Image (cartoon, rainbow, N blue to C red):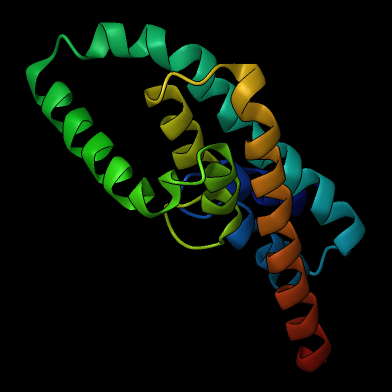
Length: 152
C-alpha cells in the first residue's frame, strides 16, 4: 500500500495529472481507501505551488540565459496567459475557478505560474490556489466515488 500511496503522491505532484489523475488512480486503480488517498493527493498537489512561487525565480534567472529555453518559456507563458484571460476579470477569484476546474493545464502548477507571472504575493494568491485545489478535489472525489459505486 505504501507504493500505491507514493504513486498517488507522484501523480498529484505531476503537472499533467494532479488530483484529477491521482484520486481516481488511488481509489479505482490501486484500491486504496479514499480516506488515505485524499490527504496524500492534497499534499502532493500543493507542493508545486511553493516550488513555483519560491524557486522559479532562481531557476528562471539561470535557465533563461539559454536561448532555446527562453523561447520555450516565453511560448508556454503566452499560452498560460491566453487560457487565463476568460478568468482574469474575476482577479484572484478567477484563479480559484481556474485551478478548481479539473481540466488539463488548469491546476495548481498553472495557477501558481499565473500568480508568479502576475506578481501576486504568497499572501494574495495562496488562499485562492488552495481554494481552487479543494474545489477540484471535491469535484474529482465526487465523480470518482460515484464511479466507484457503479464499478462494484
